Image 1 (spheres, rainbow, N blue to C red):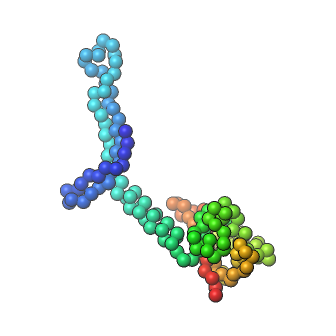
Image 2 (image 1 turned 90 degrees about the horizontal axis):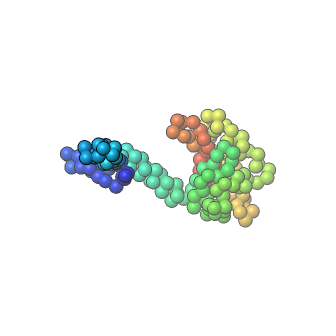
Length: 173
């Protein structure tokens, strides 16, 4: 049996969230020596403090809320140029829903004359470079163009290795 809804209390009267796992301890009882049948003779229970995990989960939720509620489009993408996340502000600026854009190539937003710029920018990030914000033209779903300032930053895994990019977009005016 496992679970993580339990709380222990520290002597300082602060709660400690824990997870636990239990397993039966099987053994021969004297009455079953003839048959060799195993019966439960006890249990092993292991408790683990999950305070750090809960704090990390709360931090991730706060960050996700920030991205979702931000007034600027925030888009994450793989180095192949495919959109991984798309917030509501991106939908508002470009007219594409999250379901239309996740898995689609971001160059969909670039006019034909500059659509080849994105792979080079992503390559620079993948190779560990930092990029200054870039002013460029993007294209909305309805075909209208909008001048934007695009800030691209590397999105790294736990080891610090770049695995994608985060794009924050702001209308240039």
